[in-house]
Image (cartoon, rainbow, N blue to C red; front, side, top):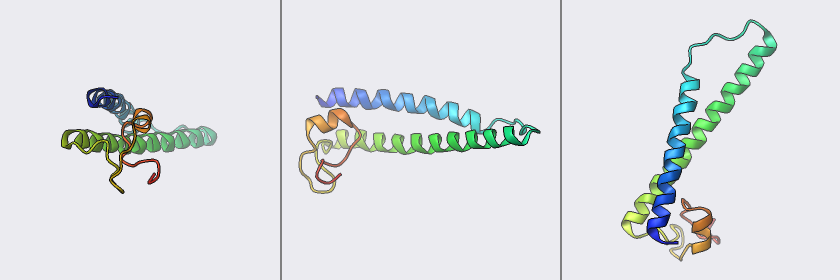
Length: 105
């Protein structure tokens, strides 16, 4: 996979994550009161916890993608950040945001 192709995949993934963050944050900042029904409150609270977890995961993924884009710019994209060896084309094709080879993962 070429660096240009890797960059494009990362940018596409970044756009998808940003769209997810807009949706999760819209849900998180809604001003609805909890239902008067206790069971409904439990479901609503559980749903909120899931949305918060999705938001945190998306934020973490965005950080990984941004680091990968910076590594492409600096020329270090294909080198493992732990041992310095080549990460490998197959691994980068599967996980374009990874910064470690399979040995160091």
